[in-house]
Image 1: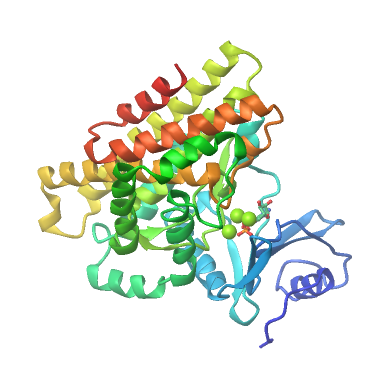
Image 2 (image 1 turned 135 degrees about the vertical axis):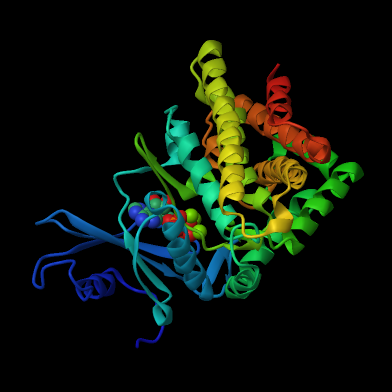
Length: 401
Ligand code: ADP
Ligand code: MG
Ligand code: MG
Ligand code: MG
């Protein structure tokens, strides 16, 4: 037992040394803090003599936001490590292995993935990942199906819902994604160049209705154990491997929120190609690649989810084909709506994305921001009428014409 305190690098090394069967007792270990330092510490510990390494992630008891600190529960380290372990049981190759979780220190010891790159960075560099659609579709189908009332015992599922009540982290999402971007809130960071477009959003009653409906789903639809923060900064990738990290926002919520997060982040990069692509042809090619990836993810996800359901569904009442058709259509609609919300908040909300913010050319940045808002708001407004994923693609294609 240890009482909670934030580790220094020396303490992280001392802790790692005590992990059984990992490092030699007297060998030299090095530590580097590699986190971005807003919510958590991330220590990379390595043994130069053997090349062995691990990651220690420790939650901090506060979040640094808007220049201030606000208290934030350490229980999110439990949520993160327990979620990673459930995800590992369902798709072992798609998440880091967790070696240990220590409650009192809010500490998770996990596999080092430094041979991968954060996907957001990879996309900014213009890389393509041909296996990503397959990998993320399998991650989504398995984690969402097997934690839902479709794929697990419904009494046990209710126990699971209790295990993953995550009120403080959900509140961040409820405010920063579904509320603040739609009004003149202090937390927003409104870029001066697009103030007119942001004010249009603040005054758009039709849009506010759709966001309220999506927010209601986030508040009340305990469908499956979500990752809860599945943007391209939570995905480590290389040519032959994809690993999903950082599920501290995990809770029981609507499945479309996770799928929509993936699509939104591909579309934010799509919007930002104004500044990243060398010329018009390269831009069109890369945008085609991003939209093709979205289409492939939906199609593979849809196929895999339905086949899991038909083979392993726990409940006779839910097996009818027409019910499955209804369910999948509603899931598509949620996905499109949540994708829109996830885009809009990244333009003028509290936390933005490097895909857009790192653009040096001010005109390209403004165009990217306007495009992201246009695509995001169109997805939100269209979501309840959608029949096919092609409608999402069309909205993105029309926006850049
Ligand atoms: P936060 O919740 O603070 O965003 P993350 O889990 O996203 O923390 O980690 C922050 C950064 O630390 C990542 O972007 C990555 O650079 C590094 N990191 C986190 N987990 C690992 C890991 N398992 N292997 C290697 N690097 C990691
Ligand atoms: Mg971070
Ligand atoms: Mg995080
Ligand atoms: Mg993170």
